[in-house]
Amino acid sequence: MKIGIVSDGKFGDRAYEIIREKFPTEWIPAPFIQSPIADDIELALPECDLYISYVRHPDVALAVIEKKKPVILGVSFGPGFLRQAKAINEDIIAPPTMCSLEDNTWVPEINEFAKVFGKPQFDVNVRNNGTIETVRVLRGSPCGSTVAASAELPGTQISEEQLRHYGLRICHFCRAPRLGKTCDKEVSGLIHIREFVRSVNAVNPKAGEGMKAFIEDLEKVIEERIAR
Image (cartoon, rainbow, N blue to C red; front, top):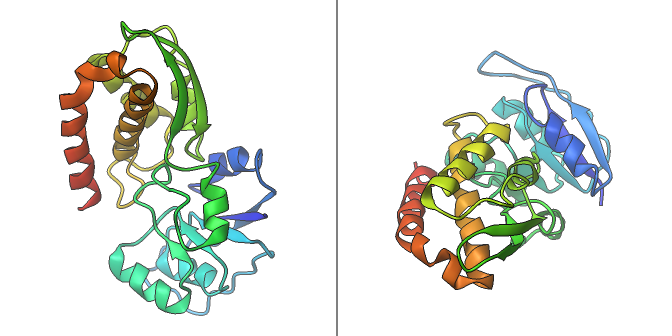
């Protein structure tokens, strides 16, 4: 499967470097338009099975969508835009963050991509006292933040303070805008904390049992932030 990363220059460069390690991937420059309305956009796209759009202008994004191929919107423009886009091309998703993507959509190409990149999955080895021995990323964010931040975990001990620090490290490596309309890096940090604790509980519930109330509160924050 060939993937096209469409960008007007600000976002998507690190995703391109990471994704092309797993899939044939092409970097596709798009015009950066500052005017609120853009007419007659000519966007020549090489043939790909799936496009990931990081463009910041809705009319340029629509030019990608009009190619009638599956599209993941790495930068989206709200539910009204998504309804308009789906009237043109049904095979579009706009995940709350690129690290919340799952392989359960109706689009085979998106599912194939999401088996490798999306909501974090970990293979962990944790002692009963909460000391993290090893962490292997099974699925992570396309920007590389999952792998980079998780490499710092072995040798540390699970605690609310340590998990908050892990979330901050995800934010540090994440390329999403802070408090962005979509792909909010702080939400990305919270999602990583939640999924890491879930992975710990799957292999050693004793190690993560003290984090239950913390994760319940975190879940509420994630829901509130995504629902904005």
